[in-house]
Image 1 (cartoon, chains in turn cyan, yellow):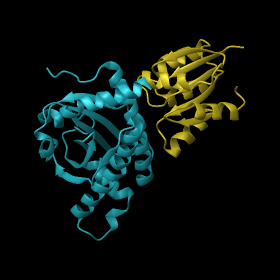
Image 2 (tube, chains in turn brown, purple):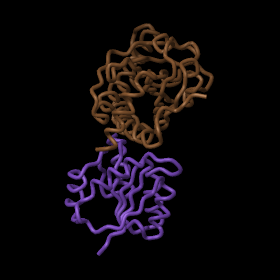
Image 3 (cartoon, one colour):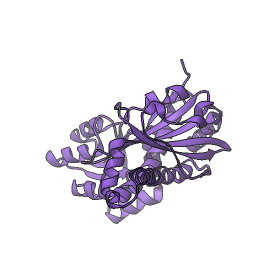
Image 4 (cartoon, one colour):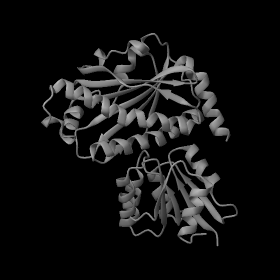
Length: 205
Length: 121
């Protein structure tokens, strides 16, 4: 049994901070897709790397996915933002962004779209998470970790060595579209002290 | 006269932030609700003539609360305080009868500005 690293108040605080950050990412996704983004309540879980893929609720329909990873540094600890799109989401994005008509190989177009969509979501979420937590967060470019693969085939070598991890799962759905993706903010166990300290400071303010 | 004020948000921290942002000395009787079901019940029983409403909540979200307020012609002034900052979300809540939309995180200045603009102080 994994011990949950946050108490109820810290969990509530992290959920609210992520709620604000995910809202800004939702605005960015809405601008990218010209659609209305349906937001859900962030789900905070404690898990281990080998069980991460199976814990993904919203995109776990047994189908294939596209995913990208964006590393970020939080209090000198490397964490990851993982964005997972169902295959139908990428196909939907191909249509709404007019990329179907471009004369480039389909898989190249989909990879480009995966990284652009990931940028629209995680690259706008992270600065706002930093602002809300009042902690500097630096991040690098996203890279693909799986295209048209099953969830268990995602290449997540960077987190495989982690022990316990905390995952914040944020689902984005587009109204009247098949689009469905999950943004996961993944914090390794070595970041828990820094994270709880930041949350405590925020609550004391 | 004391105003029955409802603060409806699923986050305890967000409810505290709204409470801390209230103008000093404002004569209100505060009721808290942690989801839309609790919120609409409070409005129906007169505990929310003024309502600060979140949108993304379990059980019943803020849009559904606004729809019920409209359907049942409940007398209350609703100001949405949400992290859902898409322009379309703002348009939707205003169409559903909300007086205004305040972007989270809330603070004293933002809330005072809106309350003063509508002559609610």
